[in-house]
Length: 572
Image 1 (cartoon, helix red, strand yellow):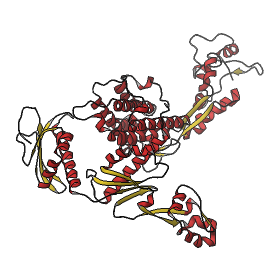
Image 2 (spheres, helix red, strand yellow):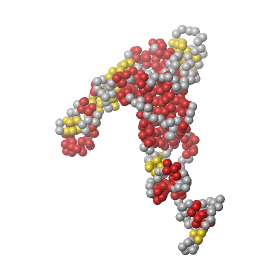
Image 3 (spheres, one colour):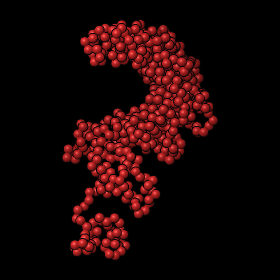
C-alpha cells in the first residue's frame, strides 16, 4: 500500500515522470525488487470498488493531508450526507469505514436517506419491466420545480414514493396557481408603486395586515425548524399551505377593496404587506423551487433570490389576534357550509349569523374582527352566543372500547354514566379535562361529543365552534342577492369584452321583472361594482360590445355592455 507519490518514487528508485498517470493501465508499468524475497513488487490485479473512491471524497477533494489542511478541518466532519437507501452498503459504509480506519472518527453528523421512487402501481422501476419514467419528458411537460415540489411535498424523502406524473398538477397545481395569481393581483394594482415608501409601523396597520405578517413569522420559524431538522417535507408543506390558505384564499380575497376601488389609489399599507409576504415566500421557497422562486423574486425586487438572505422571524406575532383570526376563518368556513345545506348562494345576503367560540377566543381582538367575518359570509349582522349549547344541544356517546379497557364488566354502567353528562362537563372533556360522574372517572377518549341543532336555522359546528345562519329572507335581502348576481354576470361580460379592470362602461339590464327591479333598487351598488357610468333598465343597448341572454336564479335576462366614452347621452 503506497501512501503518496513521494513514497512511490522512493520505492521505484527515481523521480516520477512529468506525465505520470496513477491510473490503470499506466500504473502497472511501475515495479521494483522486493527487499525480502527478491521478487518483483507490482500492483495487484484487482480493481477496488468504485465506492471506495466515493468514500475517500472528504480527503481527496482537498488533497488532504498534503495540502489544504485548514480547509479540511473547517469542513470535516460533514453536517449531513444524503443518498438513496440502495447505497447503504456503498457510499454510507465506505465513508464510515475509511473515516474510522484513517482518523478513528465518523465523517458525518447526520444522514438523510432517500427511499426508492416506485411506479404508479408501487413497483420498483426497472428497464426490464418497462416502467421507467424519463425525467426529461416529465420536466418538459410540467416544469422542473413542479416535479421537485411534488416529490418533496408528497411525503418525507425517507418514505417510498409512488410516482404518477398525472398527480403532479393535482398535488402542486393549486399552489402554483395561487402563487401566480397572488403575484398577478399585486402587479395589476401596484402599477408604478415602488417599495421603500413611508408606511405605518406594523402595530398600527389594519388587523388583516398584522395577522398576515404574524402568520408569516410563524411560517418562517416552522420552515427553519423543519429544515434545520432535515425534514424537507414539513418545510415545503408549511410554505405551500401559507401561500394557498393564508395569502391567496384569505388575505387577497378579504382585502380586495383596499387594493382597488373606482377613482382611488391602492392602500399603501396593503401594498407593502402583500409585497413583503410575496418576497418572503419566494425566499423561503428558493431551496425547494429555485427557478420559480427566482422568477418571482426578480419580478418583485429586480434581484436574484439566490443572493438574498434567508428570512428570519421579525417578532410580529400577536397570539390573541392570530387565535381570533383563526376563529373567524373557521367560522366563515362553517357559515358557508351551513348556507349550502339550505341552498343559499354566497351572493345572497342573510340577516344574521350567530356564532359560538371557546371562551378563550373571546375578547377585544375577536370583537374587532367581526366586521371582517360579516363581509366574508355576506351577513348584515353577527351575534355572538354565550356558549355553543345556546345554538346546539351537546350529547355524549360512550366509546365502549376505551371504557372496556378500564372498567371491564362495569362498562355498561360506565356507559350509562355518559348519558348523565351536562353540557358544561362535555365541554370540559373536549378541553381534555377529566370528569367524575359518580364512581366513574371519564376521560376525553371515553366520550365522543356530538351536537344537534336546536332551531330551524342552518347550523354547522366543529367542536365548540358553531355557525348558525338565519335562513329567512326579506324582500330587500332577496333583491340585494339578485343585484349581486347581476354584478357577477356583468363582470363576466367585462372579461369577455376584453376590458381593463379600470374601464368605464355603459350597461343595460332587461328581461325578468324582478331582476330589473332588483337592479333598479340597488343601482348605485351595481354601478359602483361594475364601473357603469350609464345604466339602461328594461331596454337593450344598441351597438353593444357584448350582449348575452343569461339565466339568473331560473329567470331569463339580457345584459349588454359597451365601453363608455363620456360623450353619449341618455338618462338612467
